Length: 247
Image: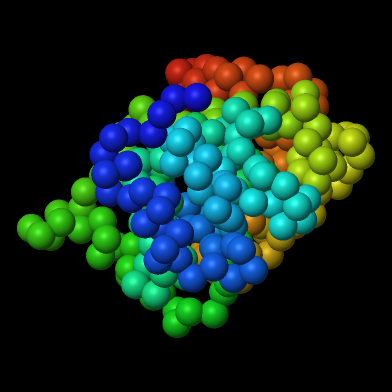
């Protein structure tokens, strides 16, 4: 295994962690965050052994409470998480694991496990916060991502879905869809399309964002089931864009 960087070892040794951590039944929650985007990806649990393996390998290891075994994140899917930093909070009862992820963190194929938004904030508060975050000190709107990378997540998701079809990991929702077959996939697409329409009619953009995301995910599952590459869809859209317009 590749050794974790000397910098991480200097910042945090296993002995120091064990001494300061407040273990609960031998476990401590670990929040996983993307080093580059600062997005929270997932929450899992570590015990002393998984923490030791994480420090030694430089990749995230956890303890699965459901399976009662050590869990090397990405060992099956390839979506490993390379650790760049390990920290514990002021109370010593939570770890912060900063990583460079090699693919989505969620078993559904989503980039982050935290993709189910709870609706109920004051109207427009989310849009206002987003506008403020994308405005620089001069009042100009800054681009959050380049045109080349803004659709990168679709390619990543397509890859994860294909992997789920090949490996059929137990308990994964995508595995469930492929096991049930095309009729189930089409039924879900119909449901998500209906919910998208409802969200649009209700003029609820927060809900619309969630429903369109669900719809696109299920459409990608359908494309994989039919072995129709996403590139073919993009090419078709490109051809349509290049045709002479009649309007």
